[in-house]
Image (cartoon, rainbow, N blue to C red; front, top):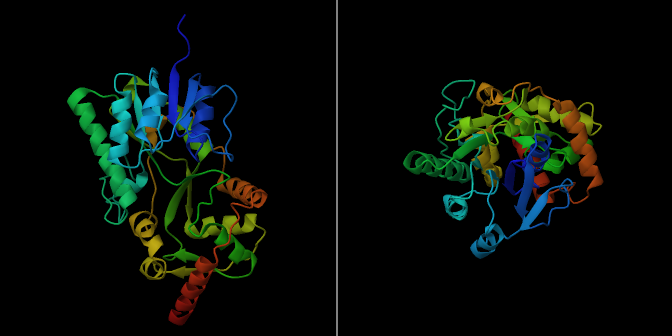
Length: 334
C-alpha cells in the first residue's frame, strides 16, 4: 500500500508557512521542514520531520537534501533568482511539484489597471526591489516550465498575518502612541481598501494546490475576504489595545517617504493604493473556503501575543520621533 504523499517546507516556521505545515498534516501529507531549527515563536506540531541546514550556505543545503525525494516542495525562503536556481538545481528530478511563494506586491498597483486584481494583472513594480526580485523568480520558473516541463507552481500572498505579526507599518510603536493619546499616522486619506488574510485562512486554500496536477505551471493568488480601509485596520488594533477614541492623522505617502525613506518603497510599490482580489481560481481547487478569523478577532490575538512577548512589544524611539514630525507637518497643512 502506498504511503501518504510527502511535502517539504523550505522554511516552515514563519508567519504563513507554519500555518501551512499544520494544514498539510490535516489533509494527509507527511510533512518535513527544512530550516535552521531556531524558531521559538511557532513550534512545529508533533509528527513533523526536520532537516536542519543554513539556507544561505550551498554546501549545507546540498548535504541536508541529499538522498531525499518529495512529492511536493514548498519554498518560502527564495527571494532572489540565485537562491531559487540553487534550490531547483538541488531538487530537480527529486520533486513532483515545486511551489514557489511569490508576492502580490509583484502586481502593478500604482494604480492597478482594474479591480479586482486577478492572476492576469500585469506584474510590474517600479519602487520595491523585493517585488522586482519576486517577479524575476517567477519569470525563471515560467521559463523552466515552458522549456523542460519543470513542475513549478507560483503562489502570490498579500499581507498575511498571524498573532505574532502586526499588519500596520510602525508596528508596536503605533500601538504605544495610541495608548499614550498620541495620533497613529496613516498614509493617504485612510480610505484605501486593503485585504488582510489570517495565516490559517491562507493555509486552507494553499493546501488545495499541494500535489494537485492541475496546479503545475500555474500561478495562484491566495487571500481571504477581509477587505477594510486603513482607518478601520488602525481602529481595530487600537480598540483591541484598549483605546476607544484613537486619533488618526493622515499624511501623503510622498511626505512620509521624505521623513521615513525606508518606508517609501513598500508604500509606493504596494500599500498606497487599493488592493482587492478575485481568488476564485485557487478556491476551485479546495471548495468550502470561509474566513474563520475576522480581523477584530485577529487584532485581539495580536495584542495579546505581543503583550506576552516583550521582544515583540518594542517601541522604536527614533520612529516615534519621526511620526511626531509627520503629525506636526500634517497640522501645519491643516
